[in-house]
Length: 136
Image (cartoon, rainbow, N blue to C red; front, side, top):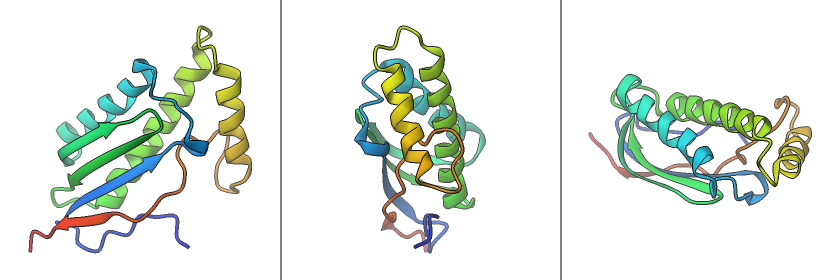
């Protein structure tokens, strides 16, 4: 199965969820959740993502969004790529993080099972988006 999200209508409004590998409770720490919030804010202001609702849970994220004439799959892919790299960096650099070594080990374990992932993997591979409304 393809690892890319399939958005059949670029102008649609979509609901997506994505979870951390092994459903790790990463976002119980506000500094890690802030990475997602800042990335969403950046994409809203600079990349054409229109957010209708979002929710960050301890181990996953829910979004309702549209892409304002952009490719929704690329927007979402860049969001996940950035948040993965930044969150892993923040965990690695946070020596006060009591779960630091274990979290790094779990993300490396997940990455070792994928030929296309180097280092660590934060996000699980996903379910398909659900189109909520078509703008046609």
